[in-house]
Image (cartoon, rainbow, N blue to C red; front, side, top):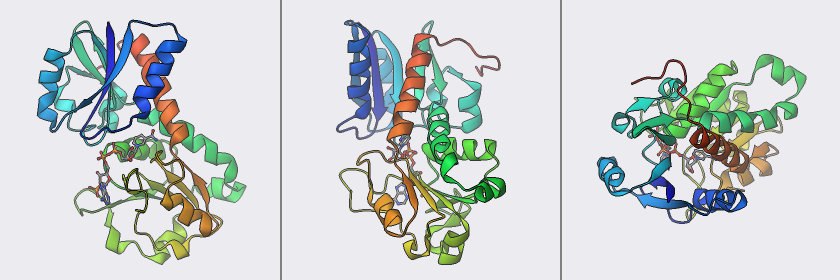
Length: 259
Ligand SMILES: NC(=O)c1ccc[n+]([C@@H]2O[C@H](COP(=O)([O-])OP(=O)(O)OC[C@H]3O[C@@H](n4cnc5c(N)ncnc54)[C@H](OP(=O)(O)O)[C@@H]3O)[C@@H](O)[C@H]2O)c1
């Protein structure tokens, strides 16, 4: 049996399990299976590896994308630059960490480029990045790559540029791109939304939510009510999963691999 799976603290219903089970079925890979592995703490990870024979790939989700890194044998240079791992490949008995959220978010941001006016494209909209966790690191990497200036909004002064209480209407007015990388609004807490001054939004704003369940979050609905363009997390989800599958099938050692 060739085994894959997802590690995280609380997994519930998983997109990844359904997605990869479908990929295996479509490719006729009857000896492949994908399981959910809930870990109360990341220090349970070595035991999972010892007790699960035939592992070929793992995805990593909340809250372990950063804390899993010290447990890995090797790190792909992109994952090292981002500082977060969401995909693990097993190569010659060694674990190697990758980041496919970067490819996922590149795909998502490509969908909004045509929605920005020429003027907006030229000035590169200033962005607000809500949350400072694993996915936020991948988004920040892509924003830097694209020359989009941004500020990170965090509950803690140490992890972000500003805290939520500093997020006022004047800041929201000038930051035309707002990206939610917190789990606020994620199933089952669908009534939650990041605490923004939504009334400051205009038709020139673009709101992106990495949350994909539900596909239309309260954050996006509030944005739409105020005329903003809105983008959900589903396209990113499929793009990052496709990249993970590509890596698992051919996990070649990239130059600059960190041991
Ligand atoms: N669509 C996709 O492909 C995709 C990919 C990756 C992630 N996601 C989604 O993105 C979300 C975050 O995932 P992640 O792996 O980055 O999780 P994570 O590492 O736990 O980071 C989430 C961050 O959100 C902030 N946060 C957490 N709870 C909060 C609360 N109650 N109020 C305000 N801020 C809060 C925290 O930042 P501070 O400590 O700085 O406040 C935390 O670091 C999840 O909903 C996940 O499903 C989607």
